[in-house]
Amino acid sequence: MARRSLAATGDGSQGWDDYAPYYDWENARTIGARDVAFWQRVVANARGSVLELGCGSGRVLVRIARSFLIGLDRSAPMLMLARRRVARLRPSRRPILIRGDIRAIPLRTASVELVIAPYGILQSLIRKPDLSRTLAETARVLRPGGRFIADLVPDLPTWEPYQRQVRLHGRHGNGQVMLVESVRQDRRRGLTTFDEEFIEHAPPRTGGAPAAPITARFSLTFRTLSMAEIRRRLERTGFRVERILGGYRGQRWTSASETWLIVARKR
Image 1 (cartoon, rainbow, N blue to C red):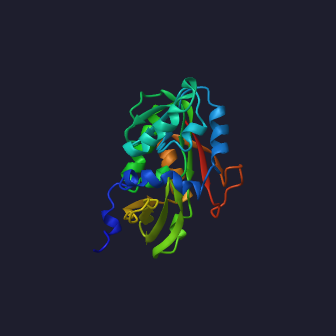
Image 2 (cartoon, helix red, strand yellow; image 1 turned 60 degrees about the vertical axis):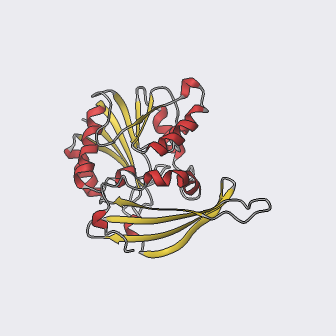
Image 3 (spheres, helix red, strand yellow; image 1 turned 90 degrees about the horizontal axis):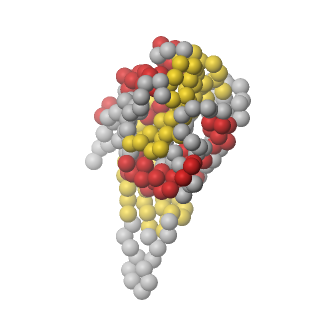
């Protein structure tokens, strides 16, 4: 069966529910905790409520846990993982978890001091109006003078397309899992699609035949804009860009930086 075209990838929310069982497994082998110390420093300076857009499984959220912290995500399976993590924290440090859409944030106007968008969550907004709506909603829930910090993964458009490569394999729970991946590019529209196939092998049964492998197939699509375009959109939405960093240790930004961190303040 032919793959769907990139034009038929929906609004970017597809695939995340299916990704949930493997999200932490894959990220432990890619980004790990490289960004956590940065977000801990950012949140430590906040005096009011903090909102994380697209908190997912709680990978960052539970490590920056503090009073008045809110995690927002659209995926119920991802939030189920986050709730398990949050339940292990002391009650005084447990964030509030909300299932909702970052394009229509279910919080009061001017109720938040800081909004963070870790690890490329804005790039999952693959339709132009959706990014505009999300930035407008972020500005709405921020107090005047509140900050918005977004983390972007700029190298996605540089990936050369490939078909069904084994990218990762290793232990997952009591069994083994292998990631077979394909990459497609629509460079005109700035879209990068990862066609994912996680093949999971359960441990052998005692005295019986091996269990059949379980295969999960789904696609994740991301949209990458230039720094100039991101800045224009933020400024049109009522933000003033204060700093652009090229890494989690405060490195100077260049267009070739591995990470783009944008620090903006609501006017």
